Length: 293
Length: 280
Image 1 (cartoon, rainbow over the protein chains, first blue to last red):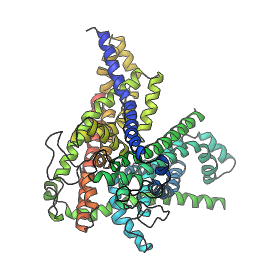
Image 2 (image 1 turned 120 degrees about the vertical axis):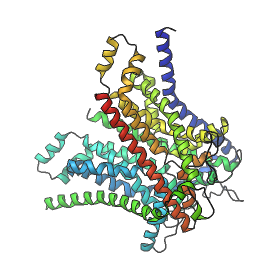
Image 3 (image 1 turned 90 degrees about the horizontal axis):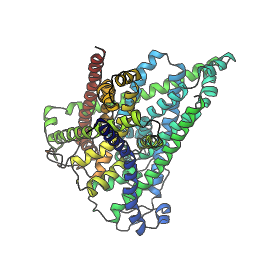
Image 4 (image 1 turned 180 degrees about the vertical axis):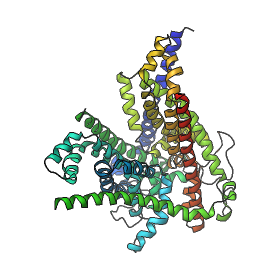
């Protein structure tokens, strides 16, 4: 075989490997869509999206996904209430105040938080944080949205902090110097110049963090309970979309039944939610990159 | 007044940062104090049991190692090949741009969705059953974006003069990549692979979704065996109400974290070795 033909073949093979990622996306959409369509043939879309009771595993089957969606949003909101302010303040400290030696030591340690397997966080939420919170709130149930939400916030914090810090460090030094020259303190410079200048990058980080929170599974599967419930009360057991998928997967649900199809329908909803968030986040980051290019 | 506000704000930011680190400390302390006493050779060598004191993680540890090795074998060649294409061949084409955007999005898809893909595609459609192979294939898809992104970074650090020198000697594009560029990028590629694997080793949700077992009295003996992994065993134990099983879960977490640390240590050593080799 001539060298040129060999080169051509190799290039095609490499291209196929790269294209596999597109096939993966297509595969996800097709697999989810097939079962979702079969599911929607039995349950009207409107009932699925607006129903307030989710009991596919009981004798009286109801397929209203709202309790799972609200449970997911409740836990994610608690997680963001932790990760957003703490992540942003940590990023401001690391980017605007910290001596570089301190930053070199602290940043990798902070990133360890992101490397801890999520099942470990689940254990921590159930056996440490929940009992601790029960001393403050005696009415807190053993399974609840609060504790996994807080722990999830801790898990997401490094993501918020490191992406926000990157965005802030990309702000040209000249803007800071201009602010100092006008007599502003470092706090005023950080909050009124650097954060606004890095705003789209920081927003992109937040949105990506929300997407992570919505898709997080093990922490909630372990510590939030398995009771789909339409409530905003963080003290009682709930169930998220991801935890429901785990619950059904643990059982022996035969293929082709409506119970089996529910996990794909819920998965489709989850995929669409996170995919939209990811697209917005990518778009914001692209825009940000152009600003100071 | 302004100075005070500035100082207060600085302290608040620092306190927030330290609070996050303290939480990490609490997590480590909680797990070590719960689980360290349970660790022993017997714990590493025993199969699961209804009796918490006799139960061990041998089957799960072996399952994790099988799945991880196979995941690496699947994700490394495909990931590196994809990265080479995007970085060395198709950099400017519209197709490459689209693939890039797609990879960035895939990296942020929740892992449980990959589990549903694995269930529909590998377990059912391709008939792999709930085997080590199906689990590894699922995790390999999950690991691919990380391998691709880090390999691209590594390829980018290879100076262009190396490529030009090779072309000047009459080498073809592939000869240049295979003989010059890849060897220089190897430390970065391996570091990225281990990074991806250390994420894969902690993954629980996708493997539960494809139907990996939560109770299994044997270790896998081929890629078609059914299996469980450490995180699933941990999940199984932590889900039981008895405190003794929670102790087991904490001890198993320590085993998992030890495995994670070992992998990262290997990554550092490998990178060191190679870098010395390249310089010499």
